[in-house]
Image (cartoon, rainbow, N blue to C red):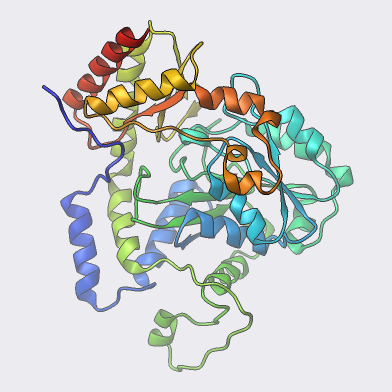
Length: 402
């Protein structure tokens, strides 16, 4: 019997519905106590001192770049194999993105090329924890430390670190672990996404964390994020409502990207269930891995002795196949009611980045990873029967097309 299986619907229980309704009834729906509590719980979950919740991972990452003092004349290194948000923020602050090709047969950057690209203008490198699998930060830190002698700081935080800043795009990786550490306490700065298709959702939203702790004034950094995310205004509506004066100042002309209590309440309810949701994702990954072990496909390493991903996406690569085969496979799965996806088209394939002078011919490894990649449904609304249907259909389609 044909099923209809969407790619990544949100997992919403009665707990989330009740939490949002409670906020709606409270009379306080914008940034307030729920957002502040959500920040506290995220910080605790990630083993860091403070967290900042904003309207998206993109907003978190851009605000972090601005707080780091990155701007015109600076360069930011990032992978060509990522979503546009990783690179667009660099243009937003007036800096120049420097794209690095994948290592051969890997979705991660070629770390030797990354190190070679670091020069006096380089201020930040942005690794991407793709599909929720944490990058090799040992190699990343080794590279930026090897080049610290040529680093030219131009802001307080750059001077504090004395090297290129490592700012993780962990949009996929909330809850991942690597070498005994939680994602969030690995990179200098880490930005998460809680978009509707992510493991844990606030519908739209994100969080910024860092691992600097006692090396900085946590309250001062938090206030900087608050200023940058609310027009440069010294008090938000909640602070004015709770204080004894309406008076406030606008100290700079900044942005508007705060997280409201409605979405934070949704996130709080999700966070209560999150460990069970992660375990369910890994159950499904193990089910897929066992079923596909004899097929000529490559899948990601989601779990081992020293790492455990967030289980966000299940990538498959059709070894020895091209984009035409992948697209036929995608369409056959769709004909059987299963919505798959492709993650991602390398940035140089898009018009916006072609217009900036990038050419996919300069990124052959990224193209090879993309041309035969497809992503299967992997979410916590899937039942065992759904997973079995996906597996049976995948094997049937492969046998039809091989």
